[in-house]
Image (cartoon, rainbow, N blue to C red):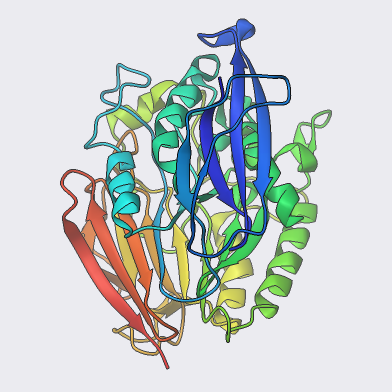
Length: 420
C-alpha cells in the first residue's frame, strides 16, 4: 500500500503527490523503495480537495486524505523551520517524543487554518539512511500525518549527505516537484501567495573539511562529483548557483509577490558557541560523520562559510530580500536588519537590509549553546527551546512572525516587519 505520502506545491495552481511502495522491510539489503509522483494541475485556489493514490502496477489505494489548494494573492500563512528528527532519547532510533519535534503542533496549525504550507530548510531525520534507511522510513511515515494535508518546500542540509546518501533520498522525494518546476534541486523557487520563496542548497560551501569525501561527499550530489578523483566541482556549482540566484531575484514581480524570502540550511550570522559540544553531538545518533567548519583548498577558491556570505549577502541586499531563513545550529536567534556585519537599524520598520532568522530547533538530537556576549546586530531573545516559526503575511506592508514552543505551543518570540 502507498505510504510516506507528501504534497509538494507547484506554485499556487498545482501539487505533486509523492509516495512510496516498499518491498521487504527492516532496512538493509532486502529493502527496496519505489517512488511515485502524481501531479494535480489546474487547481482552484483556496479549495478543499480529497484524494487517494495507487500505482500503475496495481497496488492498493491509500486511505482518502484531503488538502486545501494554495493561492496567488491574499493573506499568506506558513510554518518555517529546520533540523528535525524523531528521537525520544539517544538510545533509540525512531521513538518520537512530542516535546522533541513539532509534527503535532504543525498538524494542529494546519487543521486550525493557521498554516497553509511548510518550508523545511534541511536536516531531516538524522539521517534518512541510518539502519539501512529504517530511520528515514519512520520519519517520513510520521511526518506524512502533516505532509499529506499541507504541501512542503524542503531543502537540503549537511545531514542529507551523511551516511553517503549524497542527498539522494530527499532527491527522490522532491524529484516530481523539481521536474514540474523545470528547475534544479540545488536551487529552486516559487511564488505562493504574496511571497516569493527561494530554496538554496549551500552544502558545498559549508561541508568542506579534510576527508569530507568519505563522510558526506563534501556536500555535493552526483551532478557535481568526480568519484574517480574523490572531489567535487565547486567552482562549477558556485557559478551556476550565483548566476541562477541573481536571475531569479531580478525576475521577481513585487506587485504580485511583495515579500521575498531566501532560505538555506546554513547561517551567515549566529552567536552559537562552537567551543561547546554535548555528549549527544559526539555520538551524532548513528551518523558516520559530522560537518566541520575547518576548510581546505578546492582548486582556486576555498569553500567556506565566509565565501558563502561574501557571494550571497550582496545579492540579498541589492535585490531587497526581506528575510534570510536558516537552521543548522540547534537553537533560535534573529538579527536586526544587517549587512556586512553591521546592523542598519534597531527596529523592523522599513528595513534597509535583510533580517536573518535562525530556527534550527524543530526537533534536533541536541541543543547548541550561545556565547555569553553578542554583537550589536544580534537581537534578543536567544533561545535553546525546541521550537518552530509561524509566518503570517497580512498584506504587502506587514509580515507577522512568531516563534512557537514545541512543548506547549506557547509563543516564545514575536515581531512584525513593516514596510512601505
